[in-house]
Image (cartoon, rainbow, N blue to C red; front, side, top):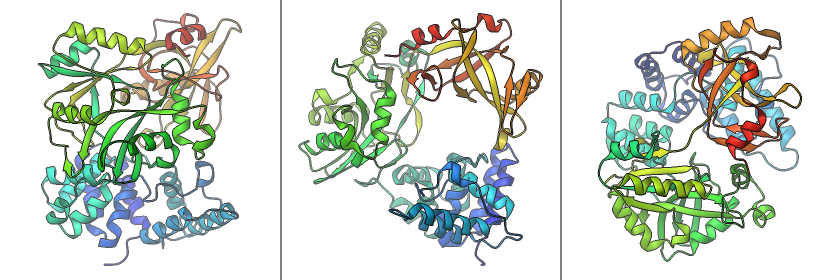
Length: 511
């Protein structure tokens, strides 16, 4: 077969974006996978999942857009594009910025206008075509003809779909079956479903459960093989060099090989967690030594996935917990209560919240570790804050939301000035019906616009749920909402009845 052109992938991406049918999306992806050469499968799988194979290329969103004229015809192959990004990822040191710009211009100069736009979206992670990883996994299953359970488990163990796609489509069942848990290679973490209350969570699981503190830190997966310790985040990025104190804690354990699941967070001198952005800043800092003294990170582990030569994923949760207790000191374990009494569970939850943590996770005692899945055996319970805020502006959507006004700018009343204080943006929680309604509504409130944003008269009140506040230098009020999502629009309230900035600070309990 001929080498696959980038234009073929762009066409498939457009085809996937044009339909809301999961079956139709999968069919389009299967066709693309089937047309790929063995050496192209990993690239094609990555690109049609909306991401580059290279986790970092040094190209930011500001420089992603093409600054050179487009090519008149399509000649770029997917292999050539991948090679160009591999070269970009390898650039560092003096002169690298200039070299990166020249190489990116050379790549974009060979791309047509539509290919340039698509590549920019790929670089920035904004290729919103509706082909999320779950749909791509379905496509790999259908294209390979292998049992779904086998492919899904391999994806969980490998931590990535492209590698499994290559194994499934080039070798087959034996190669997929051989993909297992390996110390030093992160797996996708198990995730929790949600419930409104501890009582509801306990009722859905039945019998005795474990109730564990839910910490507001960064998820870490710690791997140790002899003297070598490696740390990975929830997104499987390696952060070993950024968390030396966590590395030291794992290296001190009386074990040769281990995989642990847990959280790392900044704890203040009073024993309470520091604001989340301090924890996040440590995890992102390239120079951990400079900030370690003022923001030390403490690990808290809650699961044990492998111990020496034994894999523990399929053991019941209570057995993994027993092994964890035997290995990890109490000061490095997440607080935990086993009970079938809702009153005891509620009291434990109140104590966790009082200590500054964000909630609890209720866990079935007989559950295996379902890597990569948001299963029903872990259920998180967090108090949800709600506020009535005013929509100050709104941005045009992209991808599937193109043509609709989508991302809303949120403001609280400021009694001191008579104006509004912006607290962030969100497009979460919006249904298609809501998008249709708000597009018409907000165009009627328009006071001005630029290419991307429509400014509004501050009249429309919206009820917003959020998980907490964080300090922010981006907004004049010095704070922003965390995980804000739309609950409903409040036509029964005027902007004068919206919540004030003082109420926001009180509800969010920002330290």
